[in-house]
Length: 403
Image 1: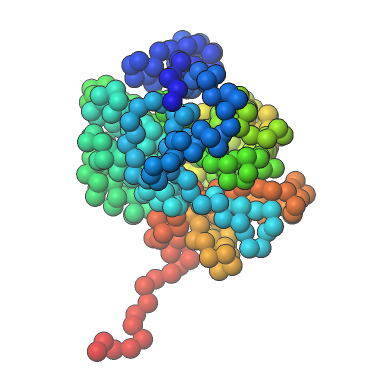
Image 2: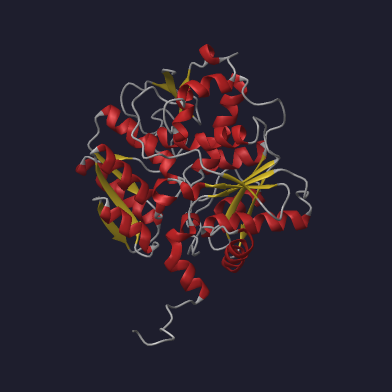
């Protein structure tokens, strides 16, 4: 397993030690300060086949994402079995694979990033963690903090799906519901963290959630026979998964673990009611403007201005990708279509991706023969209340009298 060589700013490339907990770059002249990437010395793994390395790491137990421990921090993990999620081949689209992240603990991809963040928090001896969340990160932090014996302080919009509130409370977290958006929750954490002694594990404000999310990049390449797909569709709120996968592709190429070829086109999908990345991409901007009056029932996409917007936009352009937005009506239609025809109950964020695929196929941006990976970032069951509301579905009265 690798030692962390250093932490590197994504903006100014300043280097920092990983011996003590770090947040964001303290050397940046630009604002906001750059997020920090974990950098390893991977020289000892170069030339060793991936299968040989991974077989050793995953031999004795269900390792989940820790099958890639050779490219993760060398510390004992806090794990609930996250990662190694199914890659489902669509029955109707020959080139489409759905990465089913709903099978993770707490039902979403957020388990990956928070597993790594909490693992490192325990390693550093941190006692109190805080996060603003659109919903799913809250449940994941609450679960992993409970497993690690660490306090979790969670701030969520009051209208999050009820499952997110329920699980955070059940796991014993300190939960505050806020009359506002995730940006309002983030402001509260920022204002109180020093006084309260909280370590902020917000999106891209610490280095290790990216490390957990990058395992999605390793998995999709391994599950496709160590080859890149033509495109990766990712529902983009904070965008950590997209950033993490791009980092994984860089490491895979350093290690020689992926067959030579062009990296996939990265497709960032947003909701029409909150699409700051799409607007910035279309305008040719390097960063996003805050989206006003954000509104969508895909709560994970209701992020008015992602902290890593400059990284996301750069990745889209490097990869010849695109950002696009879909309406809530299109999202709901895709949820129902995929449920009836594929047996998959997508999250609203995942259904934004499937709806976007249809759009790009119809426009000619992609061909039916292109091999693409669509990320369903969570189980639709976690959104039962908001999907039912969108469907105008109420619990029916019994047709027959009780016995």
